[in-house]
Length: 423
Image (cartoon, rainbow, N blue to C red; front, side, top):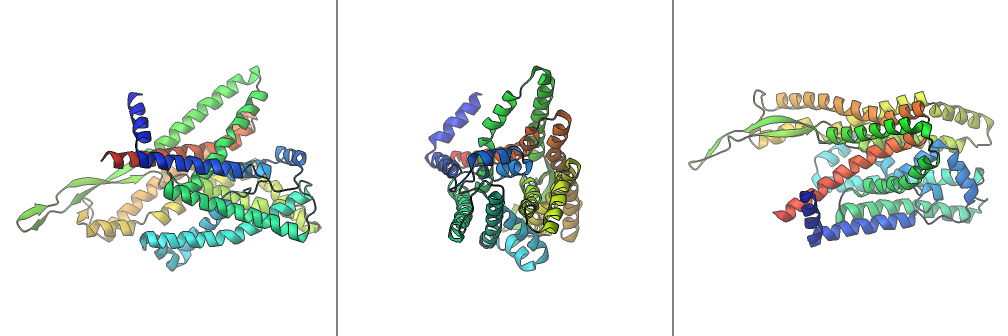
């Protein structure tokens, strides 16, 4: 406890770090203010009843940062940008130019890669904004709009989403932590009081054992997420001795840390984006005046609403995206080349292609453990909801994964800043 107090005092006594923290807090408060500004003409009662009866919209509201439940000007959240990032990441596997830009051109290449993602996010935001406005009009939440009013509302919603992307980048550059992740984190945390209130309102003495078991599961999940996130496999490496001008350098043994979960919380966010985007389109098509289109959309929505199908799809997507993101961000060939250039080698393994194959094998096995863990924890709340009947657990579990991972990442970045200031 004493060390924690000293660390806290050091954080707030350092002017630059204190400024970064206050900038982050100010930007997140700005986001929450924007999330409370609704677009005009909303039927509030109809909106509340719609969200109470629709599990998909409730989950999308959490993922969008809480702005959808009020139809705010930032109702889309950062989901268009995340979807655009997924598409760009997929293109790295198919287009060598994008792969070279992301992995080999350094910071300049990644800035260009992010710029392409932002550009792609605009048309995706337009599609989502149009779909939501039409959907809410057909549900009676919004009144019939003239063409000009429709275009204005759609432009405001698209601009709000891109504003959040810019705000997230400000946090990343001038604040502490990853801005986009923190925006999602802030939206999830802002929904906690309502979720706790719902549990208190529906509390009954007969369900005390259920609540206790759920609490134990939550604590175990938090411990598991922290453990797997921090777990790593050390690969021993040795630097060859080099003689220069009579002086000998090298001969040092150290290790290369490979994390069990290299992808962090990104697979969860990617999987949710893939699951939510089709549902949003189907919700829009479900109210179509064309009978065949509406009937097909209704059947597909019923399929996605099936807990078994949804749980299996969620499990598989998280598993695949864990491998996919690890393959994009971790290149064994590049690691082998860097080791060879620096005069390092893995004892018992020949430098070059043999080292790359060995690292690839180790990373594949580690990723299997991380992918299975993330996938299981992702669907665990769905299992608990089916057993206990407590509806909020399905949303709370997804949020819990994101919150714990973001907090761990944030604490690492703060500790890194503190260590730099101490030195």
